[in-house]
Amino acid sequence: MESEYTLQVIDLDALIVGAGFGGVYQLKNLLDLGYNVKLVESGKDFGGVWYWNRYPGARVDIPIPHYEFSDAKLWKHWTWKQRFPGSAELRAYFQFVADTWDIRDHCVFESYVNSAVWNAETSKWIVKIPGGVTYRATFFLPNTGFAAKRYIPDWKGIASFKGIWIHPSFWPAEGIDLKDKRIAVIGTGSSGVQLTQELAPLASEFVLFQRTPNLALPMKQQEFDKGTQTVPKERYPDLFAGRKSSFGGIDYSFATQKTFDHNPEERRAVYETLWAHGDFHFWLAAYGDMLFSDEANTEAYDFWRDKVCARLDSPRLRDKFAPTVKPHAFGCKRVSLENGFYELFNRSNVQLVDMNETPVVEIIPNGIRTSEKEWDFDIVVCATGFDAVTGGMLDMNIVGRGGIKLRDFWSDGVKTNLGMCVPQFPNMFFTYGPQAPTALCNGPSCAELQGDWIVDALEHIRKNNYKSIDASEEASKAWAEGVAAIANMSLLPTTRSWYMGDNIPGKRRECLIYLGGVPNYYKILEECAASNYEGFVLA
Ligand code: N01
Image 1 (spheres, protein in one colour):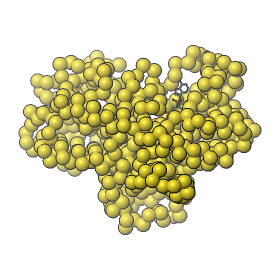
Image 2 (cartoon, rainbow, N blue to C red):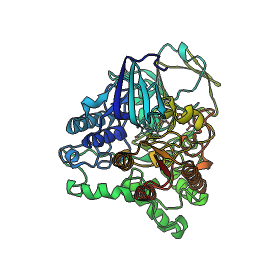
Image 3 (cartoon, rainbow, N blue to C red):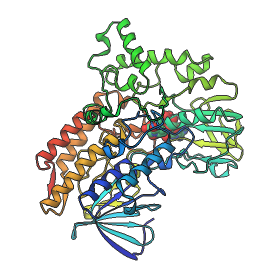
Image 4 (cartoon, helix red, strand yellow):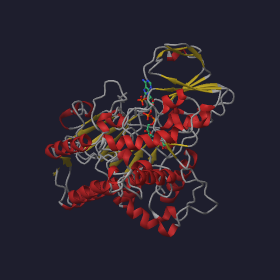
């Protein structure tokens, strides 16, 4: 809801939204350059998705040392406990970052943007937050990430449920008593997988409601000995520098060989090596054609299927989790990492409901009615995801030149230049949003890559006394076409996923992610800056 009144107007050089990796990085860098800047965040503290996602088992799927900032003032003095840190450890890291960078006083927590309107006469963004405060800012910098807006399907009867009904990203800080409860988790994305792993062993009865099987990969979690990380810290600078040359902003990329360059024995050996490594290697270090050729993709799926089937006791479970015919192109829905997920379903208190066979009809006071029967639950966790990539931005009522609303401007397709700016919305830069590497790139890598480019662009404008920078319509049209063209070469559009906007009823179907990989993206950004921002109008 928009504030109707103004008690206080505060002038700023820049207003940042979001205290996750993207927002915090820009805050620190702009403060260092002497900008008058504030950060507005809806949570009570730092962390972004890690502030909100406190559900049992919530943890990152990018290994340390990649999932952290590259500033030596931080990594030299911070020691992680696990290779894939959990949400609490990540929140502690954010506290350490905030203290080290001394950014706390520049943040307004428990607040949010009601509206952000470009004023062409003054070349300022007029940004309203609740409580009558209006910011008048030269730059508006949304860093809301790709998972800021929860999605819960519109099932009849949700309000009638007498137990606990919860979306995982609203998990209370004080926790929920789960012991010996009858628990349902709906949804088999990364949240659903992680929740299952923690909740199924505690519950008296546990039921996972699945619409699409998650083709998950073994995480291979590792506990770090006190003070010992797997990678010696002397290597960190090289590793961080190397992020820009890896497809996903980590330290590996797709292999140059194609699947059928190898004979079956050689191929199996490659798959086994990737599998033994764990994490995303079987996906993002695999044969380069896996995401482009259906035949190549099926080879990878069949290997994955054999591995998973060997862990499941019953033919029904094998058919539901790992059907003979692949349910979708492997790797074209966001791959999740698991730790003992599949074996849990061999237990007698753990069941799987196939929502395609027996859909949810309604939520009833005692639980869930499917087309087959009534299920009684004490707790239902609705792990049904997010209005991903665009949802958080569109919730802020952003209005550009001539009163055009971002929601309307994107109604016939997302238009951005370089996945960071929108024509008609001058002096607005965002990170980890549509038409950028975003969810296919490690979060901190993307925060730094895009954040550095944005801060440099702001400096260019300031030093040259421009008032505004506007993405050109032509460049944005070409960028959108390029994003779509790369997607159309891949198998991604063959699969229903949030990458394509499919998970939200009525959302336009289009590829929301730039699939060209970080090295290409970085090169394009560098070339743009070197050309004095070709593709932008500076005034
Ligand atoms: O959400 P999701 P998430 N009826 O959208 C199902 C990141 N993340 O919160 O696949 C029935 O992936 C939906 O079914 P289907 C990560 O990038 C990372 O789990 O659409 N089912 C799906 O199974 C991830 O990709 C971490 O058929 C419905 C599930 O709900 C992203 O966040 C941890 C339905 C939603 O899965 C989102 O993950 C957590 C309906 N009407 C999240 N609507 C890590 O770092 C939706 N579903 C490890």
